[in-house]
Length: 247
Image (tube, rainbow, N blue to C red; front, side, top):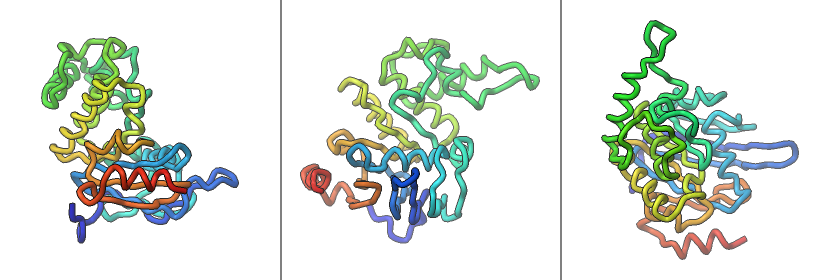
């Protein structure tokens, strides 16, 4: 995948993040290009989640710049992040179990009638259209409670939210940690599908084998620093695993 000369969709330049005397990120550079899947890999404490939280607007960098399509931006809140087309999916907080599927897809961006009443009919209709368009199986109605769904289906609903609001980038922070092998495969299929419709993704994992099949490029973090980047066609699981295991 040759990105030479292309403007990154998102670029983080010289990012530092400190918590008191602890530097979680140190002079980190990180890029995401359009229609690309990036595997962000490293051990616990490598800085992966801190990076994701900065792009999600939950943390502000201590120093450094964030550019979106070549323009410097400030991500001071989760709303700022979503307004720039960045959608974050966590392993255990992507959806609200007590709400139905449609309410989850439109959470925080509900459609209303006469300013105060929710347009439930339209949200139900649009939710089913988007679920069907990305091939989610086994959901006959968007009025079903999310609590009734499998783990893989819950993550797929969160991905459907990103598709509905035309997000540019999905940030997936260890999205399959608590899922079975079958459900993990289910989520991986959707990562490939959203890439095919132009949505980039950053897939965070502490194991290379979990992301190898669904990403184009790997970025390895260690102690808050970017210690290596590899295009999948030019490397192997063994080579990246050796770097991850070295100190």
